[in-house]
Amino acid sequence: MGCDAIWHQKWTANLLEGNTKAFHEYIDVFMKIFLDDFTVFNHLSTHLEKLKKCFLKCREFGINLNPNKCAFMVFLGTILGFIISKEGKVMDPQKVEASVNMPVPTTP
Image (cartoon, rainbow, N blue to C red):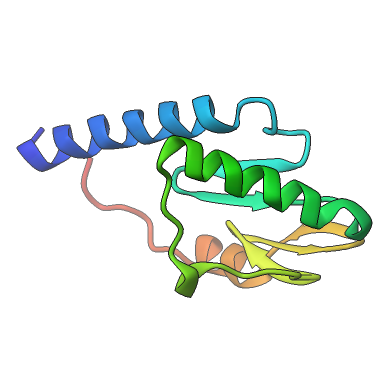
């Protein structure tokens, strides 16, 4: 394991711990986190209130958001290989196809 791999493991562990600590009360209630990405979901009538809570936690814990990577009021989108809509979520067929057509590894 190279130095980069060790750094990446420590960085990932610290990131997960920090995000879990910052948003622990929101996870699975109205928020999902995957590494450095998070999604806030809720009914439209209370969505802004939930976003404000998340933004305040970001400020409290020094979490910076990149506005170029933020999307708001998404009613249909692809997140982590799933197509999300108000009806629910389904696997992205393109991701499934890529997995099925992936070549078999030739090295152990």
